[in-house]
Length: 95
Image 1 (cartoon, rainbow, N blue to C red):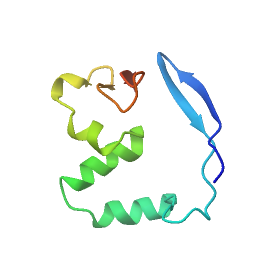
Image 2 (cartoon, rainbow, N blue to C red):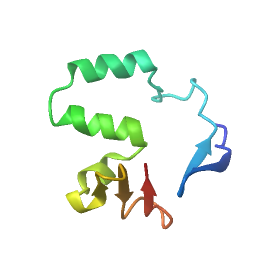
Image 3 (cartoon, helix red, strand yellow):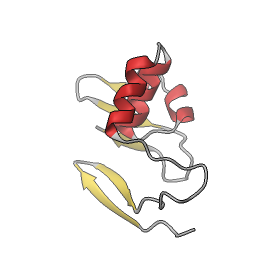
Image 4 (cartoon, helix red, strand yellow):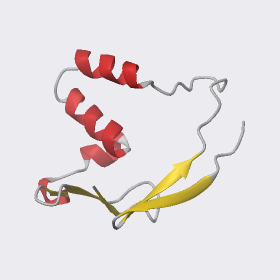
């Protein structure tokens, strides 16, 4: 298994990690194509569809989405504050 190559880029005040994807031959790993995402969203029912949209659009983990409250969302500035993420640096404000 190859290791991910980590670097980062920023948009505004939010820093995003850039990861080299795992090769397709890793068992039990499948990276969705855009077409597969669209098919999934077309068939998903609520609230799973809304959770999937947030996960796919923001790169959030399921537990990060389920822990969200209205206070984590700034509708005016169109940002989400992710708290208590998987790593110690996971608290982040993302557009």
